[in-house]
Image (cartoon, rainbow, N blue to C red; front, side, top):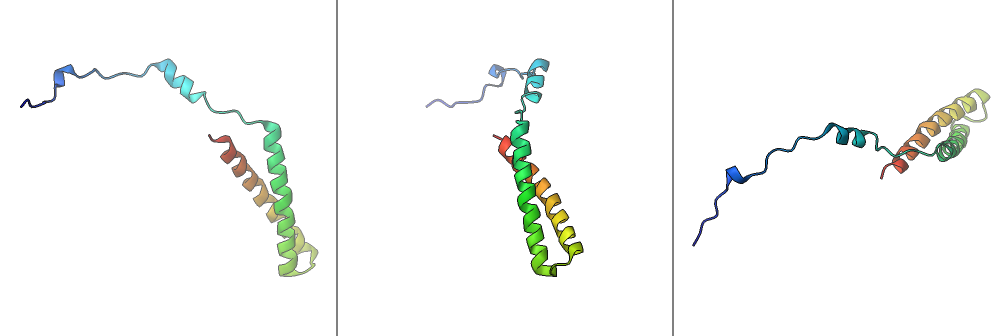
Length: 92
């Protein structure tokens, strides 16, 4: 019965990465369509703005200051939420 031992002198040498290959990887990021991006963000801003206004109306009544503050908070949240949706859709 033969024993199989490791052969350290037969191993392949270490492969060094070439500079050109590393730059190809860095520049290979997918491009995002700007019309699609603005459309998704706009829809998210409008929906979250209306949702913020509705929540504020039921929480604080019809006071114009609170309705404005709730709408602005909803718009800001909708903008960042829309950006996260676009970022998630651009990943493959």
